[in-house]
Image 1 (tube, rainbow, N blue to C red):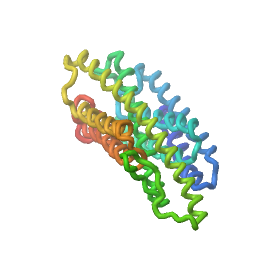
Image 2: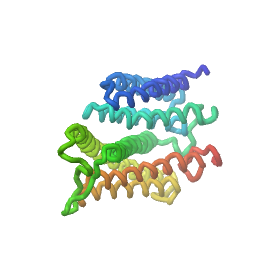
Image 3: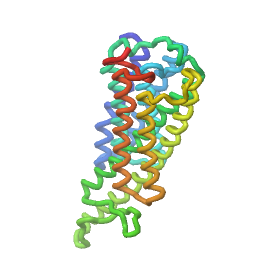
Length: 303
Protein backbone atom coordinates (compact mmCIF):
# COMPACT_ATOMS: atom_id res chain seq x y z
CA UNK A 1 0.00 0.00 0.00
CA UNK A 2 1.62 3.26 -1.20
CA UNK A 3 -1.29 5.69 -1.18
CA UNK A 4 -0.42 8.23 1.56
CA UNK A 5 -4.13 8.88 2.16
CA UNK A 6 -4.70 5.24 3.09
CA UNK A 7 -1.50 5.16 5.14
CA UNK A 8 -2.63 8.16 7.17
CA UNK A 9 -5.92 6.37 7.77
CA UNK A 10 -4.06 3.34 9.10
CA UNK A 11 -1.94 5.56 11.35
CA UNK A 12 -5.11 7.08 12.81
CA UNK A 13 -6.55 3.59 13.28
CA UNK A 14 -3.40 2.41 15.08
CA UNK A 15 -3.38 5.42 17.41
CA UNK A 16 -7.05 4.95 18.32
CA UNK A 17 -6.54 1.21 18.78
CA UNK A 18 -3.71 1.90 21.24
CA UNK A 19 -5.78 4.56 22.98
CA UNK A 20 -8.80 2.33 23.57
CA UNK A 21 -7.41 -0.08 26.22
CA UNK A 22 -5.55 2.78 27.89
CA UNK A 23 -8.84 4.70 28.05
CA UNK A 24 -10.54 1.80 29.86
CA UNK A 25 -7.52 1.46 32.12
CA UNK A 26 -7.73 5.16 32.95
CA UNK A 27 -11.48 4.97 33.54
CA UNK A 28 -10.85 2.30 36.16
CA UNK A 29 -8.75 4.82 38.09
CA UNK A 30 -5.30 3.44 37.29
CA UNK A 31 -4.23 6.29 34.98
CA UNK A 32 -5.10 9.97 34.67
CA UNK A 33 -6.09 9.84 31.01
CA UNK A 34 -3.54 12.34 29.67
CA UNK A 35 -1.90 9.69 27.50
CA UNK A 36 -5.25 8.91 25.90
CA UNK A 37 -5.91 12.55 25.09
CA UNK A 38 -2.51 12.85 23.43
CA UNK A 39 -3.21 9.76 21.32
CA UNK A 40 -6.66 11.02 20.34
CA UNK A 41 -5.18 14.40 19.38
CA UNK A 42 -2.53 12.69 17.24
CA UNK A 43 -5.19 10.54 15.58
CA UNK A 44 -7.25 13.66 14.84
CA UNK A 45 -4.17 15.34 13.37
CA UNK A 46 -3.55 12.29 11.19
CA UNK A 47 -7.16 12.33 9.98
CA UNK A 48 -6.93 16.08 9.32
CA UNK A 49 -3.83 15.51 7.19
CA UNK A 50 -5.54 12.65 5.39
CA UNK A 51 -8.60 14.72 4.49
CA UNK A 52 -6.50 17.68 3.33
CA UNK A 53 -4.34 15.40 1.17
CA UNK A 54 -7.37 13.69 -0.36
CA UNK A 55 -8.88 17.13 -1.06
CA UNK A 56 -5.63 18.18 -2.74
CA UNK A 57 -5.42 15.01 -4.84
CA UNK A 58 -9.07 14.85 -5.90
CA UNK A 59 -9.71 18.56 -6.37
CA UNK A 60 -12.98 18.45 -4.42
CA UNK A 61 -14.12 18.33 -0.82
CA UNK A 62 -13.31 14.80 0.43
CA UNK A 63 -16.74 13.55 1.35
CA UNK A 64 -18.05 12.19 -1.94
CA UNK A 65 -17.93 8.43 -1.22
CA UNK A 66 -18.34 6.10 1.73
CA UNK A 67 -14.62 5.87 2.54
CA UNK A 68 -14.20 9.63 2.65
CA UNK A 69 -17.36 10.18 4.65
CA UNK A 70 -16.32 7.57 7.23
CA UNK A 71 -12.92 9.23 7.59
CA UNK A 72 -14.61 12.61 7.95
CA UNK A 73 -16.97 11.15 10.57
CA UNK A 74 -14.01 9.68 12.48
CA UNK A 75 -12.31 13.09 12.34
CA UNK A 76 -15.46 14.86 13.58
CA UNK A 77 -15.99 12.31 16.39
CA UNK A 78 -12.42 12.61 17.67
CA UNK A 79 -12.64 16.42 17.48
CA UNK A 80 -15.95 16.37 19.39
CA UNK A 81 -14.36 14.11 21.99
CA UNK A 82 -11.41 16.48 22.44
CA UNK A 83 -13.70 19.51 22.77
CA UNK A 84 -15.84 17.75 25.39
CA UNK A 85 -12.74 16.79 27.36
CA UNK A 86 -11.76 20.47 27.50
CA UNK A 87 -15.00 20.98 29.43
CA UNK A 88 -14.61 17.95 31.69
CA UNK A 89 -11.31 16.14 31.56
CA UNK A 90 -12.41 12.67 32.64
CA UNK A 91 -11.18 9.26 31.48
CA UNK A 92 -14.84 8.25 31.30
CA UNK A 93 -15.24 10.45 28.21
CA UNK A 94 -12.35 8.74 26.44
CA UNK A 95 -13.54 5.26 27.35
CA UNK A 96 -17.02 6.02 26.04
CA UNK A 97 -16.22 8.01 22.89
CA UNK A 98 -13.02 6.47 21.53
CA UNK A 99 -14.77 3.33 20.16
CA UNK A 100 -16.88 5.48 17.81
CA UNK A 101 -13.94 7.04 15.98
CA UNK A 102 -12.09 3.73 16.03
CA UNK A 103 -15.07 1.89 14.55
CA UNK A 104 -15.47 4.44 11.74
CA UNK A 105 -11.84 4.37 10.61
CA UNK A 106 -11.61 0.59 11.06
CA UNK A 107 -14.66 0.04 8.84
CA UNK A 108 -13.30 2.47 6.24
CA UNK A 109 -9.82 0.92 6.20
CA UNK A 110 -10.59 -2.80 6.41
CA UNK A 111 -14.22 -3.51 5.49
CA UNK A 112 -14.62 -1.49 2.30
CA UNK A 113 -13.33 -2.88 -0.99
CA UNK A 114 -10.36 -1.11 -2.58
CA UNK A 115 -12.55 0.45 -5.25
CA UNK A 116 -14.58 2.38 -2.68
CA UNK A 117 -11.40 3.65 -1.02
CA UNK A 118 -10.22 5.36 -4.19
CA UNK A 119 -10.93 8.97 -5.06
CA UNK A 120 -13.45 9.35 -7.86
CA UNK A 121 -14.83 12.28 -9.86
CA UNK A 122 -17.94 13.93 -8.51
CA UNK A 123 -21.22 13.02 -10.13
CA UNK A 124 -22.95 16.05 -11.73
CA UNK A 125 -25.45 16.49 -8.87
CA UNK A 126 -22.58 16.87 -6.37
CA UNK A 127 -20.74 19.53 -8.35
CA UNK A 128 -22.18 22.32 -6.31
CA UNK A 129 -21.04 24.77 -3.66
CA UNK A 130 -23.70 23.17 -1.45
CA UNK A 131 -21.55 20.03 -1.10
CA UNK A 132 -19.34 21.47 1.63
CA UNK A 133 -22.20 23.26 3.37
CA UNK A 134 -24.71 20.42 3.45
CA UNK A 135 -22.67 17.24 3.76
CA UNK A 136 -20.06 18.54 6.20
CA UNK A 137 -22.76 19.96 8.49
CA UNK A 138 -24.74 16.71 8.39
CA UNK A 139 -21.65 14.64 9.18
CA UNK A 140 -20.67 17.01 12.01
CA UNK A 141 -24.19 16.65 13.41
CA UNK A 142 -23.90 12.86 13.29
CA UNK A 143 -20.62 13.08 15.21
CA UNK A 144 -22.09 15.28 17.95
CA UNK A 145 -25.25 13.17 18.21
CA UNK A 146 -23.33 9.88 18.30
CA UNK A 147 -20.93 11.07 20.98
CA UNK A 148 -23.76 12.65 22.98
CA UNK A 149 -25.77 9.44 22.75
CA UNK A 150 -22.88 7.25 23.83
CA UNK A 151 -22.42 9.49 26.86
CA UNK A 152 -26.08 8.87 27.64
CA UNK A 153 -25.48 5.13 27.33
CA UNK A 154 -22.63 5.52 29.81
CA UNK A 155 -25.10 6.99 32.30
CA UNK A 156 -27.10 3.77 32.07
CA UNK A 157 -23.93 1.73 32.54
CA UNK A 158 -22.94 3.68 35.65
CA UNK A 159 -26.46 3.33 36.98
CA UNK A 160 -26.35 -0.43 36.53
CA UNK A 161 -22.92 -0.87 38.07
CA UNK A 162 -23.54 1.22 41.18
CA UNK A 163 -27.22 0.36 41.84
CA UNK A 164 -28.16 4.01 41.46
CA UNK A 165 -31.57 4.43 39.88
CA UNK A 166 -32.56 7.66 38.12
CA UNK A 167 -36.21 8.39 38.95
CA UNK A 168 -38.66 11.20 38.36
CA UNK A 169 -39.77 13.13 41.43
CA UNK A 170 -43.34 13.73 42.43
CA UNK A 171 -43.80 16.72 40.13
CA UNK A 172 -42.41 14.95 37.09
CA UNK A 173 -38.79 16.11 37.08
CA UNK A 174 -36.00 13.55 37.19
CA UNK A 175 -33.16 13.25 39.66
CA UNK A 176 -30.42 11.00 40.91
CA UNK A 177 -31.49 8.90 43.90
CA UNK A 178 -29.78 6.23 45.94
CA UNK A 179 -31.46 2.89 45.50
CA UNK A 180 -29.97 0.36 47.89
CA UNK A 181 -27.53 2.31 50.03
CA UNK A 182 -27.49 2.55 53.80
CA UNK A 183 -25.76 5.12 56.04
CA UNK A 184 -23.79 2.38 57.74
CA UNK A 185 -21.89 1.50 54.58
CA UNK A 186 -19.62 4.55 54.38
CA UNK A 187 -17.31 3.22 51.67
CA UNK A 188 -20.22 2.34 49.42
CA UNK A 189 -21.82 5.72 50.07
CA UNK A 190 -18.56 7.46 49.18
CA UNK A 191 -18.21 5.48 45.95
CA UNK A 192 -21.82 6.09 45.07
CA UNK A 193 -21.47 9.82 45.64
CA UNK A 194 -18.62 9.88 43.14
CA UNK A 195 -20.62 7.91 40.60
CA UNK A 196 -23.70 10.08 41.12
CA UNK A 197 -21.52 13.11 40.40
CA UNK A 198 -20.13 11.43 37.29
CA UNK A 199 -23.65 10.59 36.15
CA UNK A 200 -24.84 14.16 36.62
CA UNK A 201 -21.84 15.53 34.74
CA UNK A 202 -22.30 13.04 31.91
CA UNK A 203 -26.00 13.85 31.77
CA UNK A 204 -25.22 17.55 31.40
CA UNK A 205 -22.49 16.99 28.78
CA UNK A 206 -24.69 14.61 26.83
CA UNK A 207 -27.51 17.14 26.78
CA UNK A 208 -25.25 19.96 25.60
CA UNK A 209 -23.59 17.81 22.93
CA UNK A 210 -26.89 16.51 21.60
CA UNK A 211 -28.26 20.06 21.51
CA UNK A 212 -25.36 21.16 19.28
CA UNK A 213 -25.83 18.07 17.11
CA UNK A 214 -29.56 18.71 16.79
CA UNK A 215 -28.99 22.31 15.68
CA UNK A 216 -26.44 21.15 13.11
CA UNK A 217 -28.81 18.43 11.89
CA UNK A 218 -31.58 21.00 11.48
CA UNK A 219 -29.26 23.26 9.48
CA UNK A 220 -28.12 20.31 7.39
CA UNK A 221 -31.66 19.22 6.56
CA UNK A 222 -32.63 22.75 5.54
CA UNK A 223 -29.53 23.21 3.39
CA UNK A 224 -30.15 19.78 1.85
CA UNK A 225 -33.68 20.80 0.90
CA UNK A 226 -32.40 23.93 -0.80
CA UNK A 227 -29.73 21.93 -2.65
CA UNK A 228 -32.27 19.28 -3.67
CA UNK A 229 -34.51 21.94 -5.15
CA UNK A 230 -31.55 23.34 -7.07
CA UNK A 231 -30.35 19.93 -8.31
CA UNK A 232 -33.59 17.97 -8.80
CA UNK A 233 -36.34 20.59 -8.77
CA UNK A 234 -37.93 19.32 -5.56
CA UNK A 235 -37.48 20.42 -1.95
CA UNK A 236 -38.36 17.00 -0.52
CA UNK A 237 -38.76 13.68 -2.30
CA UNK A 238 -39.06 11.18 0.60
CA UNK A 239 -35.82 9.57 -0.47
CA UNK A 240 -34.79 6.89 2.11
CA UNK A 241 -31.98 9.07 3.42
CA UNK A 242 -34.30 12.06 3.73
CA UNK A 243 -36.92 9.96 5.49
CA UNK A 244 -34.47 8.51 8.01
CA UNK A 245 -32.90 11.92 8.57
CA UNK A 246 -36.37 13.22 9.45
CA UNK A 247 -36.91 10.27 11.82
CA UNK A 248 -33.55 11.05 13.41
CA UNK A 249 -34.56 14.69 13.80
CA UNK A 250 -37.85 13.70 15.44
CA UNK A 251 -36.13 11.34 17.90
CA UNK A 252 -33.71 13.98 19.10
CA UNK A 253 -36.45 16.62 19.09
CA UNK A 254 -38.28 14.29 21.48
CA UNK A 255 -35.14 14.04 23.62
CA UNK A 256 -34.90 17.82 23.88
CA UNK A 257 -38.64 18.10 24.52
CA UNK A 258 -38.58 15.78 27.52
CA UNK A 259 -35.48 17.54 28.85
CA UNK A 260 -36.78 21.08 28.46
CA UNK A 261 -40.55 20.76 28.86
CA UNK A 262 -40.93 17.67 31.03
CA UNK A 263 -37.85 18.27 33.16
CA UNK A 264 -36.52 14.74 32.73
CA UNK A 265 -32.90 13.97 33.59
CA UNK A 266 -30.77 10.87 33.74
CA UNK A 267 -32.18 7.48 32.77
CA UNK A 268 -35.32 8.37 30.80
CA UNK A 269 -33.82 10.84 28.30
CA UNK A 270 -30.74 8.62 28.12
CA UNK A 271 -32.92 5.82 26.77
CA UNK A 272 -34.27 8.17 24.10
CA UNK A 273 -30.73 9.20 23.13
CA UNK A 274 -29.62 5.57 22.87
CA UNK A 275 -32.56 4.96 20.53
CA UNK A 276 -31.36 7.90 18.46
CA UNK A 277 -27.95 6.24 18.17
CA UNK A 278 -29.61 3.29 16.46
CA UNK A 279 -31.58 5.54 14.11
CA UNK A 280 -28.38 7.29 13.00
CA UNK A 281 -26.80 3.90 12.35
CA UNK A 282 -29.67 2.99 10.03
CA UNK A 283 -29.76 6.43 8.40
CA UNK A 284 -26.03 6.54 7.70
CA UNK A 285 -24.73 2.99 7.44
CA UNK A 286 -27.83 1.07 6.41
CA UNK A 287 -29.06 3.36 3.65
CA UNK A 288 -25.57 4.03 2.29
CA UNK A 289 -24.34 0.45 2.17
CA UNK A 290 -27.41 -1.01 0.54
CA UNK A 291 -27.35 1.60 -2.19
CA UNK A 292 -30.94 2.76 -1.88
CA UNK A 293 -31.98 6.18 -3.13
CA UNK A 294 -30.21 9.31 -4.30
CA UNK A 295 -27.93 9.62 -1.25
CA UNK A 296 -26.40 6.14 -1.24
CA UNK A 297 -22.79 5.17 -1.59
CA UNK A 298 -23.88 1.71 -2.73
CA UNK A 299 -21.79 -1.30 -1.84
CA UNK A 300 -23.89 -4.45 -1.48
CA UNK A 301 -26.68 -3.71 -3.93
CA UNK A 302 -25.91 -0.19 -5.09
CA UNK A 303 -24.19 1.25 -8.14
